Image (cartoon, rainbow, N blue to C red; front, side):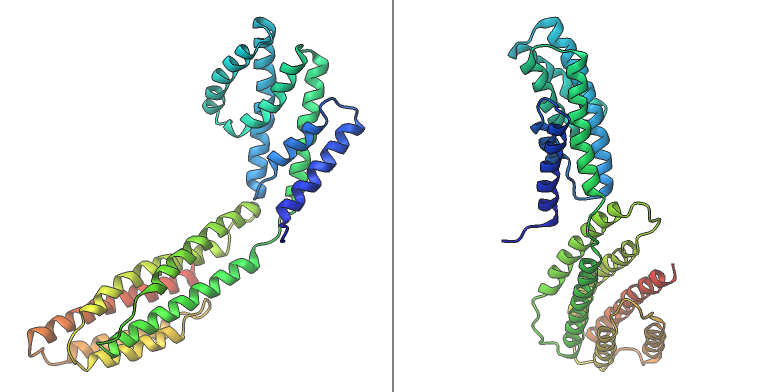
Length: 314
């Protein structure tokens, strides 16, 4: 059984929050633990935002519910009316994250049947202990650096395979490839970008997150790789240019890394474009169409390589 860091923080925070509330001789001390559990978040930035929302929502809830209970009585129907009116109010001020926490506190007021300054002070202390403990624990969130490096390596590995398969398809017209690496690459990019967003929220004092532009670049390259697939499928016939571009894409596959620039490959691509233009005109319609697709493929390869250089130069 694996226990994650968030589980450990939740257990520790709830226990310490209740202990502090008991030491201060507060009523409803266990609610401090409940509030801590509700306020443990996955990122530092979200923790701060949600904690502020919950403190404001709790204070608003105590004031609104206390006024309603004192005017109309401590009756379940009044509590129901409070809920009907308070939820739209929270939504209006974008404080809906604080609804459950504030409801815990309002139920204390309802149970006591009396809204006094002493009760307000007690509940405010419970709120501050619970939310404060959660904020304190959320200061420590493990770095996601190793996971991001893993995704980077996995994504580059998939791109290498895809380019290799494209090269084989150019070399052998009868090559059978199911394209599953394209689907796997798409899933990896989605997961990596979600993880990057989470890491950004944990390092919100940093102006620029190094993995944001990297995964954005790879995502744009993925779109180009998808466009290449039908182009390669349309290159038919036994023309010598197939082998030339197969060799070129084998080399592209071998050079997929995060550090190297694409200048050498772009120069080679220009040489191949010049060579293609210098060839005699095609003798058949099929050869003409295949050459047109090769020019189309060259344009996509150029875009793919320039994206890499733009990423390195920004």
